[in-house]
Amino acid sequence: GGFPTNNFKTGRFAGASKISGETQAALETARGGLATHGCHKGCVIRCSGIYNDKDGNFLTKQPEYETVWAHGANCGIDDLDAIAMMDRLDDDYGLDTIEMGATIAVAMDAGLAKFGDAAAAINLIKEVGKGTHLGRILGNGAAVTGKVFGVERVPVVKGQAMPAYDPRAVQGIGVTYATSTMGADHTAGYSVTANILGVGGKVDALKPEGQVDLSRNLQIATAAIDSTGMCLFIAFAILDQPDTFQALLDLLSGFTGANLTGDDVVALGKSVLKNEREFNLQAGFTSKHDRLPDYFKNEPLPPHNVTFAVKDEDLDKVFNW
Ligand code: SF4
Image (tube, rainbow, N blue to C red; front, side, top):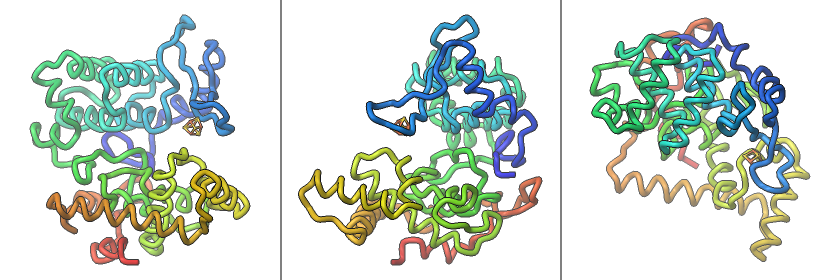
């Protein structure tokens, strides 16, 4: 019940099975593409892939979960070929797929196209590529598009569109969206781990309790991992396996010549966040910007009918350590 559908109106998409990872993997394999592929040598997770068109010709690299959601469920579209085409267009034009999916959904709410109309969604992205007046508005993202067309329900924080988890049904990720220095960025503190996946503990996704601590700890760990250049997906392994975390420390120690401990990694993450927060302060950001749009607090999300319930004063404690 946390899969944002039709511009964050419900948390469940009737066409989910048509655009699922399993469906995409089977289609890619049947067409001679690749359902799994390492984006760099030596990766054992291999979350990338190759998506071919129905004639077996390369169309795009495997659209990942966020992209499939953004151009799929969030726009009411359950056609994988159309989603893959939009991914290809985004790549060719240099557009972020999450931001463009959110933008098209806001444009649909504004009446520029109907939810579920894949051909119209593709044409809207082509407007951006052509640089038309409409395309230049859409190309500026969901926040600008919402302002220009007078749409009130625009899922952004600090001007950046939210990704594929509704913060009402996954409240820990809502804390990260609200307080991340960059905007509504899921990777800055992926609370989906303990909220949904049961990785690194378990915190009830539908309730506010425990979400601030969860998001804080993940934001610190993520800032540290990101600054090492490691792929963030190693976090799934190091969160639950002390041996694997030690292996990361050994690797970093060997590379830098320092004898790093777990406390050193935490200190590194905190110092990165402190610098980023300081940059934002100097740029004019205040605690008022560490908030979700009001409708997430006032408008219950079906089917669980929950609102985002983490209090503002608790959001202001995320960076108190
Ligand atoms: S897990 Fe990371 S390094 Fe491996 S394929 Fe995925 S993005 Fe690339």
